[in-house]
Length: 149
Image (cartoon, rainbow, N blue to C red; front, side, top):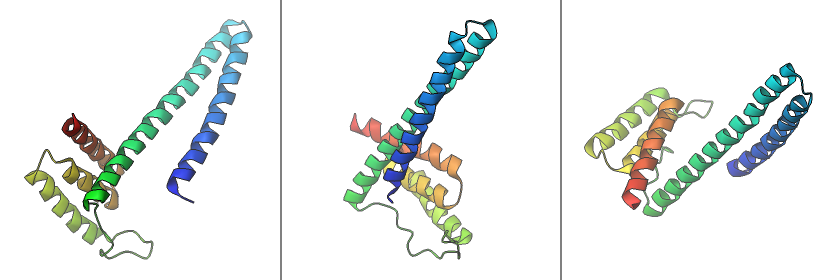
């Protein structure tokens, strides 16, 4: 199953959960008691937060996919197929670190190139540093948006 289909399925399940949660919030608000109203307001904030998280996550995913397609069309997508792998399938740590160093040098040489930042984000990801990969990908998205405008 494609990753996008899994994401759509998980989003649909989350939407059902958020609707059910909002229904509970309305039921709590309808009790008319101070405690029920206070809990209802608190419970109602959870679906609002959930919707915001889903929208931000999907927006980010669509932007990353757009960059990926553009890089693919240009022939600039990162290729790590030749890097040695562990039995689990993950890239060997030493090889990932060496590949990361090359991508970091690319960014240092061209600070305003979103393509270099995209490849650095990918390097962070294969090195297992997801937090920095997301932050670096946001930088790539911002630079690409500035380039378009």
